[in-house]
Amino acid sequence: MGAVMVKSDQFNITPIVASSSLRTLAYEALKAAITNMDIYGRAEEVRLDERKLSQDLGVSRTPVREALTVLEQEGFVRSEARRGVFVIKKTKKEIVGMIHAWAALESMAARLACERATDAQLKSLREIFPEFYEGRPSEHIDEYSDANIRFHQKIISLGQCEVIEDLSSNLLMHVRGIRNTALRQGDRAEKSIKEHVQIIKALEARQAEHAENLVREHGLGLAAHVNTYGDYLE
Amino acid sequence: MGAVMVKSDQFNITPIVASSSLRTLAYEALKAAITNMDIYGRAEEVRLDERKLSQDLGVSRTPVREALTVLEQEGFVRSEARRGVFVIKKTKKEIVGMIHAWAALESMAARLACERATDAQLKSLREIFPEFYEGRPSEHIDEYSDANIRFHQKIISLGQCEVIEDLSSNLLMHVRGIRNTALRQGDRAEKSIKEHVQIIKALEARQAEHAENLVREHGLGLAAHVNTYGDYLE
DNA sequence: AGGCGTTATCTGGTATACCAGAGTCCAGCT
DNA sequence: AGCTGGACTCTGGTATACCAGATAACGCCT
Image (cartoon, rainbow over all chains, first blue to last red; front, side, top):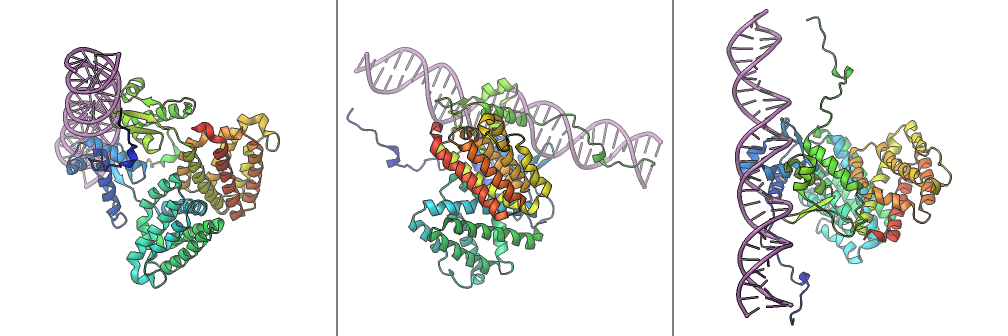
């Protein structure tokens, strides 16, 4: 009885079996394949064959089907009985809708961040723009593209609301490609970076409603932009 | 060659096979069972047995498992390998988070409704409060509870953004019970109904930002209320 | 009696076989 | 030639069998 049970979180072992079930593996493989594929480049629909996927992944249809069920639920794929499962092409309207939803969630996160985040956390937003913080973003468009997405994700995480984080991350998967494209159109990049600076200032000053409004307007701006320039989507 | 092909929507046949796959059937059955069950009444976790469910539903495990996958994805159940699948009890914190997300989405819907809905549609919001429109809601608490939820759903549908509608309907499934309970606590009902009136007025006047703010504040009020009175959740 | 290892059993995960509807293709009739 | 119809094939949907980890039950040893 001399030994004392140690609280398990003092260990925090890294799991032996790095990940998990075949279903999860299949899910990640398929999701990666779908998001990396340039869906909007090609004209025809992309069809996925359960049996072929099983062979390629080296597992049976069962875990593949379960992975496809999740992807269908997330809106990446649509399954028609006895016809096939197809990669979904979002319409421009749907993408604009997603950006609206995103704007709503991110603006709420910004409000919550003002109440919940530490000064240091809020300040850390600036670090996401290392060199081109103010400058000619069009010269660093690729890095800025990544930074841009990290910036918005950071705001959402600072809101410390798991539901909002989850919903947003799903939306992001669908919109990621479009966000990057949009930055290269018109003066979107310059406009975007200026608004980011404003947002950071409002957050640091903990002006919750102001920050909330700025984030929302920023998102709505993107939605309007896509609505104008996004005809390549259909 | 004398016959002319008739446009099919002049017929509008009701489909022979009313609904769809066993998986869908199982999903609906399970979802209904879960949402009707009073999860927060009982202390212990509720476990679901795939095999038992299969027998009770009269189908094999396969469609049941697929239904459970969807329910897991929606956050209603959690499946632990070789241990069982359990109905999830949301913590108070999670529910408050859901209400925050809901408030964000609904307020955006209100803004969009101001731009997109017709006068008649906006006016129709009033019809949701037939008799107790202004009065003693505490005397009609059950009817008001339903009307309350319909009211919020209506605002969201008037926003005409499918993404927001889908995300919200999922959140609603989780929060429905709590919304009704909250109305019975403190002066929540009276407060709620007054705010509804304000919201309708702002919408009818197409004051987008005002309506948006009112809806958001209304939602945040509910979140704060649950945070105060919702200890029975844990 | 109490601790411990072994075994029986129960559970979700996976593999596989079969089913039926939808699509395709071609023979055969008009 | 053009349409029709039936057989063949391809696909997702469903049922079933088997697997391995986790748990519980039990009995042995001390």
